[in-house]
Image 1 (cartoon, helix red, strand yellow):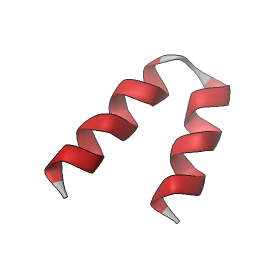
Image 2: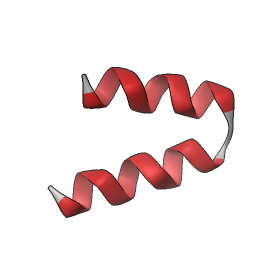
Image 3: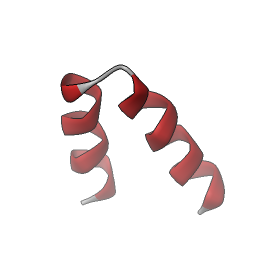
Image 4: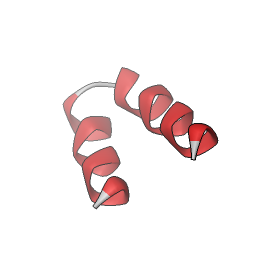
Length: 27
C-alpha cells in the first residue's frame, strides 16, 4: 500500500517523492 500511495503522490506532485522517501527511512 505504501508503495502504491507513493507512486500516486509522485504523479500528483514532485514533493510526493521526498515524502515517500522520508516514510521509507522512518520505517
